[in-house]
Amino acid sequence: MANKGVDIYIGATSLTTALGNKRATLDGMHRGECGLRFSNRYAMYAGEVDVTLKEGYTRFESMLIAEIESVVQQSGITLMSGDTQLIISTTKGNVELLADDCENIAARAFLYTSAEAISDYFNAANRAIVISNACISGVSAFVVAREKLLRGECKHVIVAGGDALCEFITSGFASFKSISAQPCRPYDAARDGLTLGEAAGAVLLTTDYVKADAAHILLAGGAITNDANHISGPSRTGDGLYYAISEAMREAGVSSEDVGFVNTHGTATRYNDEMESKAVAWAQLDGKPLNSLKGHIGHTLAASGVVETILCVEQLKQGYIFGTMGFSASDTPHQLMVSATEQHFDKRCCVKSASGFGGCNAAIVLDMECRERGTVGDKRAWRVAAEYTLPHAEQPFAEFIRSEFKSLDQSNMKFYKMSDMCKALYVAVEQLLRIEDFGDVPPTRRAIILANRSASLDTDVAHQRIVNQHLAEGASPAVFVYTLANVAAGEMCIRHKIQGDNTFFIENTHSEMVHQQAQHLIESGRADAVICGWCDLLQESWNVDIKLYKNN
Image (cartoon, rainbow, N blue to C red):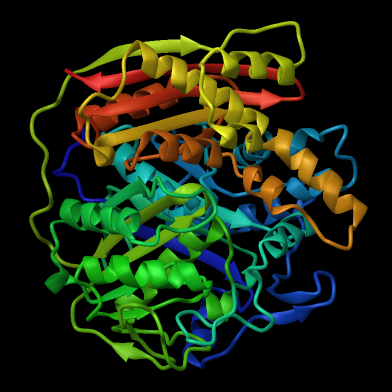
């Protein structure tokens, strides 16, 4: 059960973006500088980072190690201690390794293997937790870390997030026609798409007041939700993001009057910015100074939630927010307090939000004030309402899963467009809910928590094969969208109207972590029903083993 009397402080922080290290990034944003340059390698504007490679480590790993190392040195915290946990958030990790040979997958292309290598560098006592939840991964990591600290499972958590650009990623986003022809312009009426960037950052979260940053900023609340609407497009109503923001604020014990500013995802894609304006207005935050930092450093995928949270911490301290680079005039459905120049605020509390493929949303609240936080009732009991394991078979997966789907007696043609891992999960969830369904549990009280070993490598290989052909028409968006492991959960959210937590973990073997996470969601009153378990598929080998937890 979470101990709501525990304060979670922001400790040491470190980051590197296209503008440089933390000091250089802050100074550059203050001066209104843009770190986005035209990249001949990718034939698009991008925010690229100079990386000093560590011997024996990849570019992605070197980026993360440098930031974690900085936090360790600043704080004196050691990962060799059993009371310190490392949580890594990344979208694609070492996916560039597939370019050399996508038929024989390199060991370090597996996210868990890369995380183990980083853990070993620091002689970590605890294995790293890996979260791969598309572009909300970084913010999701803060929510998960906060819950671990509240439950007393550790005293310190280092949250590290990073992603490095490569052709795999740039070609995928280009296939959606979502890349701007110039440096992106969040919320501007002339916006024409996003600009990709790469970055890495690390943050110490601690229950130890002595280890806190001198400003004593609290991670006061957080929530994860789903639109249950579309796997690659944001909700047109903004309801999913609103639920995340409102729940994070409720947990933090703050109202809209208490919030000084809002830092949004702000990708500069037309529908994302429109959706965010609706969600922010619904949360009564449209009268608050608001910014997006992506015009300075680009959309840095899973790193964005970590890097932008660090920058929120610094903005809270300085009392003003950076201007939104490239902004001139808005045409969003709800007018937001966006400006190209710096804006001052008088309440030392902020909301940071993120949204991503698979319909996922997340929000956290950072607060410098001591106040009564949201509370929960007594610890609630849970039960296993149903469980199901997808059978194994000697026949090829395509034949097996087609037969399994036909046995459901459904005519859902969307099934045939899904990735193989999604198909496996689809059938398993259908069978699970035939044993016992959600009943009258509201959509916002439903959740899905999954884990696997290979993330989305099965589809990654399919996408890399297309990329390697360098076709005139480019990559396939229908394939690329499934190169995000959490999209499998997103498909289930759409199918079964799941609008609560939807976190995807990556680990070497099927531990009890996801089941414990599901149980905690119910015990703490965050959910009434949770689909939870293992969902893995790679090269014709599958393993899907799930349960439905409900409160009594």
